[in-house]
Every structure is written in structure tokens, then in C-alpha cells.
Length: 404
Image (cartoon, rainbow, N blue to C red; front, side):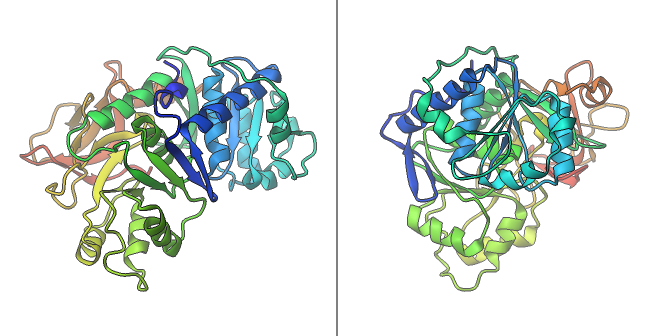
């Protein structure tokens, strides 16, 4: 299936996205995405073409992401804060045909030397922003006809996500529609606390990051929930948003939780609406778990993943998970802990985490050697991360090859 269909069956009147003071329903989201598909098709872009996104964590990113996927094209989310040489390299590496930029991406695009990206034919920008050799996306959206969704198979490429990989320089990880959809299903099928239609989540992570993209944005819309987008992380703004929007799901890295735990000018019941609190992307210090639980009465549940797994692999789902554990493997995937010889270790012994499942990526773009190092002939993804498992099946990270 085309991943862009994941929210199609939800009630049209239900709020899907809250951003910048705007409340967008599922019906409005579908209409906005249809317009974006129409723009891309009107430019002569075809299924399989690579379209980069240079937007902040706001609705511009959301409609670009689903518009690109729905048109059968391949999305390439990029960091709008990256320096121009890095953006040039990434655009050239993926052979981008177009870029959809929000205000956050204009500055770096002004510095990009387009001669080093010969495939780039179209740069789409918002109204009121000057940028040479670009077209106004907002004007086009009002003048072109909407385009129908393009059917995609599970094995068709959905996006290219830049990552340092399990080792070495940044590479473009190839994730299919099936990979991303599988991780959503795995997440929802895992026992314990899962996102529900009546939840309101808050996303403070960048959407060019796989955790923000699939574990927060896509998962929220898949569940039929409401998601509040915040472009920049500010602890006081987070607390205000939690109170104003009655946030029930909060997911972020350890640095976010540490910052929230250190804010003095908030009441001890400031997180009383939070039903699911999750940390990921890096190791969560036990101290932070204890500080947040002791002060706010909220238990942070830790998860583990990597870009190449779309990204979720394990997660703690209940408050009885031991502090320091990243939980158990999600439903529908296999996880092994192996020694240097590739044999399963005994309980309590350290070993490398291996993952196999429909969520595992298909490889690194134009890099068969790196792909062969990451995925063995039996389909196991070698993460490079070291862990141990206890008698109850809980996994504990010992050392990470890299933070997500």
C-alpha cells in the first residue's frame, strides 16, 4: 500500500494536526495533500523521482511528506540547518529532481550551488519569500488540479533518510512503504501502552529525523490521534502546550527530559495529563528517570531503534519495566544478541543486537558494500550496538555504536 493512505479512514472532522495556532482536521489534511500531489504532477515529476524536503517541524513538512509519497515519488527529508555544502552533497547523492522548502530552508538554498546538482529542476518556495529560479508553491497549490494517489507496493521506495549508518560517513538509507508501515503495525501490536484515537501528542523533534517522522508523526496519524507540532524545543513552551492542549503522549530524547526535569517555575502536577512518556534516540540516564518520576509522578519508558529499522526495535510498554531497560522487542520482529562468532549469547552476557523483520531497510543508496556489512545473507540487520538480556527478556544497552 501507499503509506500516504494511513490516515484516510479517520473521521474527517477530527483534529489531526495543531501547528502555529492552526487546527487541521483529517479532512483538511487529505485535501491539502491532494493539492500538493497536483503541484508535483503538474511540474512533470513522475513516480520514483526524488523530492527533497527542507522544512521545519510544521504543517508545510506534513503536507509535503504525504504529497510526495502519495504521488509515488521518493521523499528526501533534509535538515534545513545544515550548511550549504552538505545540502549540495545530499541533493546530488540522491539525484533530487525537486526541493520543497519552507521559510526555514530558504537561507541554505540561497547558498546552494545548483551546478553541482544537475538533476535539480524545480525549487518550490512559500509566498512572500524571494529565491532565484524558484516557483511559488502556495500560488501553484491554488491553480492546479488535485491529483489522485498513486498505488505503491510494499517494496517500493518511500524515502531516503541520511544517517551515519552502523559505521562510517553519512549514507542514504532506503526505506520502503512496507518498512515504514510495518514498524507502525509492530508498534501498535506491542502489548502495553499504545497511542489511541483520543490521545493528543506533542512533537518537538525535527521531522527530518526518523524518530520524529515515523515514531511520532506517522504513528499519531495512523492511530487517528491529534498531534501538536512545535518547531523549536523550549522547556517552558512545552509545559504551556501540555496544559493548553491536554497533551497525553510525549516522546523525545533524553536531553528533552533532562531539560524538563530542571525547570523550577512549574507545579509538580504539570505533567498530570501525560499517559505515555517515551525517551529514545540515545541512552536515558537512570537519574533523569528518577527525577521526573519523583517530581512529576510520570514514569519515562525507554525505547531503542535506528534509522535502518524504521526505527523502532524495542520499547518499554509498562511502568513495571526495570529502570535502565529499553524494554522487550516489539511484536512482529526478531531480535538476537550474538557474540563475535555470530552465536547467541547466554542470558546476562553481552553481545551485538541483530534485528530481522519487515521494518528492516533494503540498503544504502548506491553503496552495496556498506549494505552487505549491515544486512547479512539471512536478512539480519547488524546494529553495532551492544546489549544484554535478563531472565525476563528485558534488554539493556551496554554501548551504542551511535546515537540515533
